[in-house]
Length: 165
Image 1 (cartoon, one colour):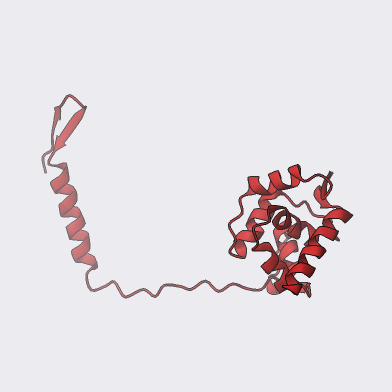
Image 2 (cartoon, one colour; image 1 turned 30 degrees about the horizontal axis):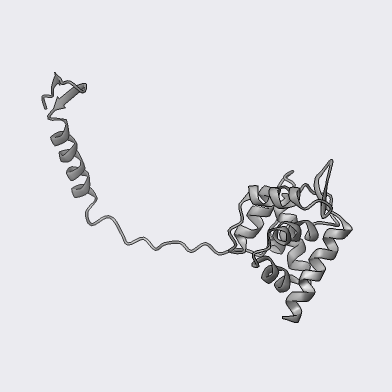
């Protein structure tokens, strides 16, 4: 196969290259025809957090710990329903509320991923902004954000309002 290169105003053009590539693709298709079987699309089955086992020296992430505490909570469905409201402060406080007894670093990224897993679009900058603007509901510590007693009252009051409605 002979290729001819020529110079144009925009650069170089190789003649015969497109025909060569087309022939090679057609030859590969012909070789594979009949050998390709229908492929079933694999369905990803989600495992509950309780059944996930940590292998080796890896520690569970902050998101894993928040999800585990959510599964163990008796208020699970109420917390998820409350988080689907358009209250950004409440959405930001719920993961902190769930992780209040553990020593994990809850960042705005963890908050965003937590809500993404539950079908709520909530960007990390919105979580950080909500906690920054509403002073007194969460405080910065060495291990990241931590919910304050005022934040706990706010979440529990929102849960009571959700149950009443």
